[in-house]
Length: 290
Length: 326
Image (cartoon, rainbow over all chains, first blue to last red; front, side, top):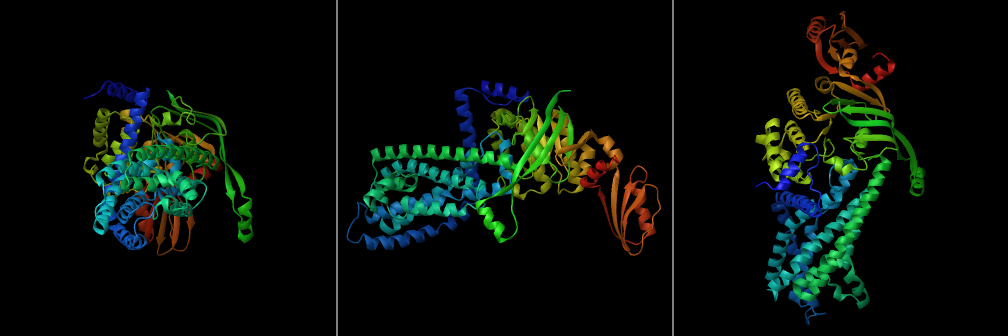
């Protein structure tokens, strides 16, 4: 059924005016529809390769198996800083799934910058970083599902069920998605550095190692000396991996709320940083002719 | 006639890094990067009317891309005024984006692994086309571009000609008033080229879409455009009808032949540009010597091993304009 807005906008479109409806709610609905659509097609695009992606990521089982052997020895005398062996393995299943599903958006951006294709996106009615984020995040969400499934099945087989699984996962799931958004924004930010650096892969490596350590990828932050743990807990890398995984294995509604809030703050901060960096990059494109 | 594009006295320069040769220069560039200014566009004046199909041609590095980037708001000029559809393209780039369409070879609008229909829906959403209008528009474009059979095939599996047809349909999803086409027929065979040209002409006539065409293919210019603007070193060196350009230059062909002996030809309208013992390069004035007469004559006069007929390259057109032979 055609809405009044449909008719108004369609009439406008034919007369050569943009199809937009310029009210605050209209703008929000328009942007939600646009980026929702980009995200959906990003997910659809990823589904084409899902089978090969799953095959490639079966090594997650190997990682969890090795980790299981290692932590079984470390935790032989009982839990350390509150983590049992069961919790530890399920924790690692979550952090690994977030890390592996994030992907390498920076490479696409780097290619667009190198070939000069990025400059032509300025003639489109959307900001390039927002489009790339939505496209890539849609794909990352699709990749996340099988990785979580592989991780959970592996953890179940290796150490048995996680206590309060349903409650934990219901609290952790929004946080996992937000953590993935933080990770995608980081990789977007690194990709945008391609306007200044010919190869941004080293930046990605550094970032990856920072997530490994300060994001609690292999070792929960609680194992650090207290002063370092206190700093690490508020870093975006912790909100990307540590907090979502911790929520899954040690569910707590109050912690969940502060985690979501912290994640939203970091998402806003990183999105702002991406926008500023792209604005600087656009100035650079003007100076160099695209 | 309503003017949809107007450039007045436009200048644009860029800075580009200068890299010296040798190790010393490389080390020095780490601490002090030298740059050089390039004047890409100089005192450029140009206007395009609504519904016009304009050929915008010039050799590589002439300033064509820079001019298109200035018109679409991607770049801003150092000096001068630009108005496109009554808007300042740089200040109101997003608003202008809703009213122009682009087919740039460097950045496809189609998603490589998805069928074109998905890209059409996506672009409809990106350009805020209401769902009902979008459905209707897709149906219309599918009919015009005859792409009904291609809609559900992944773009990566389409031939170049099929992809270009889909690409053009994608660029028209939001009813643009001006369409920028960059080399739309490059790499296509003769039959497909002709089809694409028909489609461009049809689109222009049906919807009064202004076409800003960049092409190195003389055939595109001859068949589609009424006016040609030739640019070189950032300046307009020719701005007149294609008819006049055609009369002076485009009605010529270059024939390269390989022979098994020296070639002799004495025919009005045929000029030998270069000749070796077994090769020759001829220029044929089609008004005085139709190609269908010249070629059989060549075969009669010499043992032709190989023959290639081509248009006069853009670079040649430019140099003849400079020489004043046009």
